[in-house]
Image (cartoon, rainbow, N blue to C red; front, top):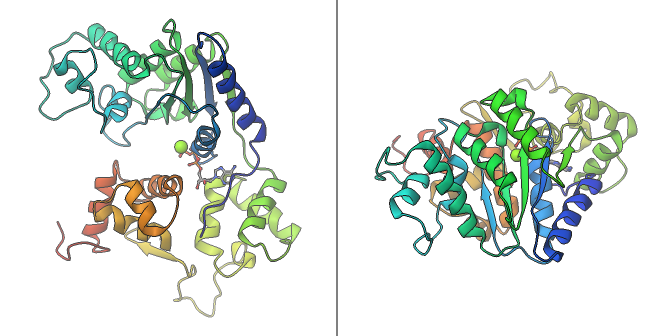
Length: 344
Ligand SMILES: Nc1ncnc2c1ncn2[C@@H]1O[C@H](COP(=O)(O)OP(=O)(O)OP(=O)(O)O)[C@@H](O)[C@H]1O
Ligand SMILES: [Mg+2]
């Protein structure tokens, strides 16, 4: 299935774009904060990606970090930002940077927690420079306490020329619910902060998604309403339903598997693999990950955009329960989907 273009969210997109242009147009640029909350799969990451794509002028840099899915460690967010970045020119102690970046042989326990927090803020400041830059915090709900403190500090740090964009599931779903709630309150309490809460797609928006997937004619209204009910209007559940049941037209979205063919796979383009139902495209992307490709290389090899690759990868991590691309690749190899035929 081709990924569907974002429907709805026009107001949120405009607000994000305005926040960026007013920040980038002011002299000196003053920090703005946008906090996007909503349930799992409601479309927070897609909104952030769409907004970033359209920012004009282009940010001087984008610091993009997310939580590790399992086994959170201190400053995961910053470690993700630093990963693959050349930090040799930064005016900070090399051993502290190595610790913050979670290099495996970094010296342990050299700095007190307060000092580390100051060093973490200084690292972000050094990376941002004169800006104007964008800082993206994905999945705040899943972050470790040290990262949450850092994000709270960044929202209050004086003269930081950044748009701070934070996406989070509600604090009840967080790893550290109280601390996440406090951090979200701190972020939304910052001067000029904007809070966006994303809700389910409306029937019209579900119809718009189905219209993209089935362009040959309008999809029956009753069917759209049933699909909306079945998925609760959640875009993730909707796109999954389409990918696994909708290969032969919209009727498959609401029907049960035909009883006369109980053994036939219900989803012609899907694959049931070791408990995770992957689409054909996801299997291809997984194969590329197992071959050690970067997102850019995957995009080139499959003829799709890098952004589409990142959506596939995040769905793959979720479905395979993997913490990282490497773990997802190992998952594939173990199930002999790709790569060496011997289990590792
Ligand atoms: N407004 C939308 N229109 C069409 N498709 C959408 C929309 N929002 C999200 N999707 C699709 O739904 C899926 C889930 O979206 P996304 O990953 O952005 O959700 P999320 O809120 O970030 O979830 P999580 O809490 O798990 O991080 C993606 O495949 C995305 O392309
Ligand atoms: Mg997300």
